[in-house]
Image (tube, rainbow, N blue to C red):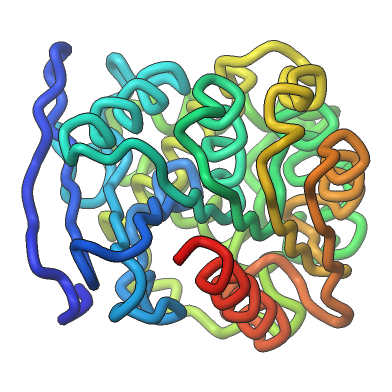
Length: 314
């Protein structure tokens, strides 16, 4: 993990979880909470890299069941409401009244929901790869008729190779749900690897090559696959179109939306729809970029957004 970290700790919950968190940068600086994606991805090793750590106080935490939070892979008491409660409790534990929210992919979902629930605690938001958790967003990424399957038909064929009949999103989720809940460890690991390879294949315009042999049983692969399935299978535990319907709650909060024009994981229409509903937002589509924050154009836009907030929040 980053050498900038000056404190690592866990926050116990009242329902059996220990949420790992860490603090980086300047304790007296601008507080910013980093919300990782997935669900289940855990904190990236370089999540502080874009921040000026003399100016920012960067807070990161592993969401329930993944990373260094325990119990690992537990879906018990693991819903969107639980994660939002953890965000509130962490802010109170650290004695922070207001903070900037920085999220990517699923992290944008949590950031938006946290701001909708407690707008008075948010100074601004930087969102990369917006995911609104609508039925159409699930279908875009996972269904045979979705955008990702149409752009990457060869990778999708491998993703659904074990499914007898791939008819719709439900058939995909049912198959993977059975696999992830199987008593056969090998079956669970193989299913997690296929799910992970699908996301890796679609996340970048220029995908990287992953050694399939290194994926089976890898902690990050298991948690990403399991929790993405768990949340999507439960409609992310929020009502359909909830975020756009409640965007009026955040109309006064400044926000920067950064989205790859060629994003096959989270469809660009979602970013545009959010911008249309969020009065104080700025939207930047990055030409030639996909979903991943490692894409050069996206990283440059994120750095610029961070620097813009630095000048307004100091």
